[in-house]
Length: 188
Image (cartoon, rainbow, N blue to C red; front, side, top):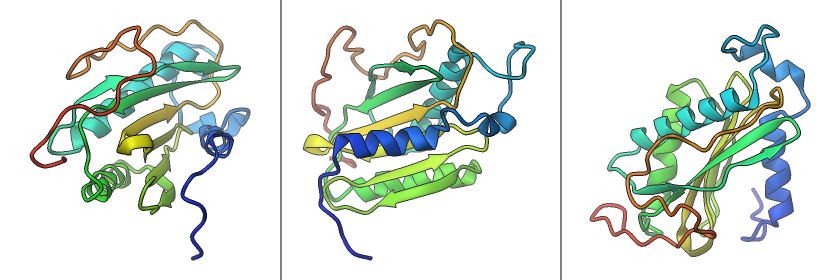
């Protein structure tokens, strides 16, 4: 396989993530469940809560623990993206271990792996659930890891902030989030 440039333009990454989310494709909702929405289609708050649960689960599955903080929530016409930023320094030598553990968890949870980027500087793993949620772990600038969950299309509704407490500083109102600043005997 031919290796492409190490830096992937942000627009290309966004297009890939939106394609994973299934926005505009009602067929991706067939595996989803609804919490009392008579139409069988979840609303954006329900989608955000399911996204949070997926991010919580993968972070719990990665051992040893990593410190994380909430990233920004974004909404679009038909879906929600929740984010987590890893505040633990993950050395270049441990990045693949982190990605492998996330990928193994997703495979064990019956997620379909859509793509694996083996780039030495910006590696990533992208998966999709049967219900059409796109999830990813990617390493970006200064080696910081980010987790994202993109919902499939959902009924428009207000979206509350995430309720899960970060296992470190919350950085509420801080944007952009600081670079990783927590050392770990294993990860760093």
